[in-house]
Length: 262
Length: 319
Image (cartoon, rainbow over all chains, first blue to last red; front, side, top):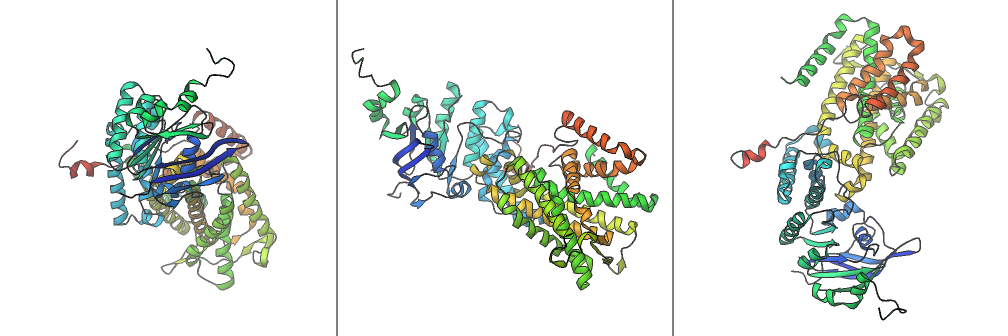
C-alpha cells in the first residue's frame, strides 16, 4: 500500500469565541487501520470530526486526505472524495424508510439529473436499479434488511445507529468516521457492532472512531489518540495508552498539589 | 383495481367530458383552476419537495407572462413558440435572485421572497425599460395557433391548459421518484445529514428554484394567451399567497394533494359565489381547522415505495 498515511492532521486548531476546542492537534491515520479518538467529555473529539468532514473550518492547520488538502472544501465534496461519517446525535431522515435513508448515501455515486429523470432514459433506470441494489446490500451488511420498509424513527436506538453506518457505507467511502457508534447500545448490540467495524475494515475501509466504551476501543483499535481540553496528550497503541500517566490523570483526575498524600 | 386507480380514471374521464356539459363561464373557472394547478405544481417542487418557504412564485409567473406578452406584441412571434423562452427567462431570473438567498432558512427566506414578488410588481407598474406598459399593462396579445387551429374560446383553452397540466403531472411524477426528487426530500428533512451523505444542498435548492420558475414561466405563456391583456394586478403578493396555500393545504410534496388543493382553493369560491361576502371568513376558518387537524395538508405524501422484485429474480427465487 501507500507509504503515506490516508489522513494526516497537522497543527489543527479551532476556537469558539476564545475557547480552544482543538489546539494544535496532529496525528496520522494509516491505510486500513482502526484508530480511536478518546478523551473526557468536552475534549474536542467531535470538533475534530467536524473539521475533517468540513462542517467546521479550522482556524489554522492542515488536513491531508490521501495527500490532498481538504481544508475549506464543502462537506458534500469531502464525502464524494471518500470520507463518510455518522453523527453522535443520530441524524437520520426520521420520517423516511430505512431503504430511503441508505439511498441518500448512494446519491453521490450517481449521475442522473432533472432531464434524465423526466425522460426516464434507459441508463437512468439502470442507475436507479443499481442504487437500490447497493442500498439493499448495505442494509443486509449491517443486518437491517428485514427492516427496509420501516420508517427510521420506528427503529430501535441501536438499529438507528446501524442504519447510519449503512447510509455512510453506501457512499462507498475509503475512510469512515464513527462518532460514538456504541452510544446507547446494550452489550449484545455492542458486540455485533465490534464485529461489524472489523468487517468494515476488512472491506478496505479505514475507520476512525470516537468511543467512550473503553472495552470496545481497547479491543478493536490499533492506535489511539487521546485529547484533553483540545490538546492531544498522547497517541499510541492501546497497551501504551493504558500505561500513560497523563491519560490516567485525564480520566481519573490528577491529584491536587495540596492533598498529595490522599 | 386499486381504489386510487379508480379515482384517477374517474377524475380524468370527468375532466375530459366536463366541457360538453358546462357553459363558457364554468369552463373558464376550470381554466383558472388548471393554470393555478400548474403553478402550484411548479411551486410544489420548491415548497413541497425541498421544503423551502417560497412565497414569491408570482414573480416568476410574471416574468414568463411578460416575456410572452412583450415578444408577441413587439415582434409578432407566435405565442406558443414563446413558451420555452418564457420559461427560460423566468428560470434565469430565479437563478439570479435565488443564488444570494439560497442559504436562508424558513421564515427568513419567506420574507425575502415576499420582497421579490413586490419588487417585480412595482417594477412592472413603473414601466421599467419602457417595455412593460406601466400599470395599464400590455394588450393585444395574439391567440395561440395549434396545428392550424386558432385557440380562442374558453372551450379551446380548456384542452390546451389541461393538456399542459397533464404533461406537467407526467414529468413531475417521474421527477418525484428520481435521484433529484429524493435529494430534495433529504434536504427538506435534514440538510446537514443530506450534506453529510454527499448531497450538494445549495446546488439542489437552486435547481429546484430554477426548475419551479421555468415551469411557472411556461404557465405564464398560456396565461398571457388566454387573457390577451396582462397587467401588474395579476401578479400581486396575494397571487403568491394563493399558490402557497394550494400547496400547503392540499398536501405539500404530493401531486394529488396539490391538484385537489387547486380545485378547492380556486374552485370553491366560484361555487359559493352567493356567500362572497363571507369568503374570507370561511377561508380563514378552514385554514385554522386544517392546521389543527391535518397540519400536513389534506393529502400528505404517502411513503415512497420501491419495486425490489428485480433483486429476488436476479437471485433465481424469492427471499
